[in-house]
Length: 258
Image (tube, rainbow, N blue to C red; front, side, top):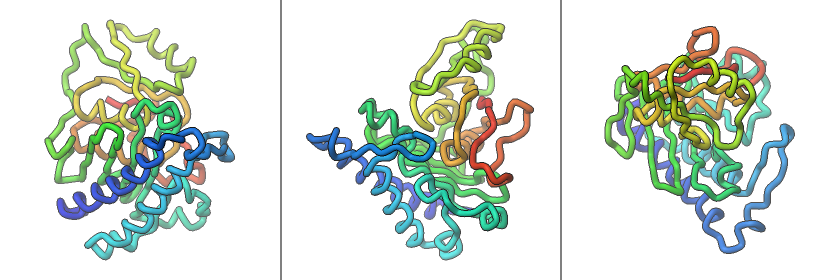
């Protein structure tokens, strides 16, 4: 559905958005220039979010594949599109212009630009760019998964004595701890922010990612595509593949990636 050329073009869009974010991130008057606001769900919104959103929204309409350029876009910063309209979309772009805003505000570098292509409720391509560390993950069906243009694969046979479990740096939950307490093998906890957690699964830097707290569809879609293309999986607690745009709510169920 998406060619190598178009995937590179989407990477370039993510880089442009990342460059805009970094202008705020590196500003001497960072605290005032990011202009933190609270959205309706009390999550933070910054000027960097909005700048990245505008770039992605515009530049995706300029990619060389006319069909993909004219697809609908659903972004965290333009999420007020009605379910009546969204439920008829077969293929669309799902975007988080700045995933890990709390990590951005903390200035720990663990934030990303996420752009996913959704087709028939599944992520078929995705780009995750971490501008503070200049790291690009990308993937598409039939093309594979890549980190900075080098192919990556999810680990198929984790060491049962050294299980690496990745978890949120800013959103730990009691359910997560209860899940960890039930693991029957030794594990090492790897804290990480944003969609980089899923990317660690894709590149075999972690073996298991239980997300037992709230996420929205734009939080996971791009990195989900990368995990799938790398040979991993992202499932609900009922062992069903995580899917997109199947209901009015944009919140994901709890999930397990491996």
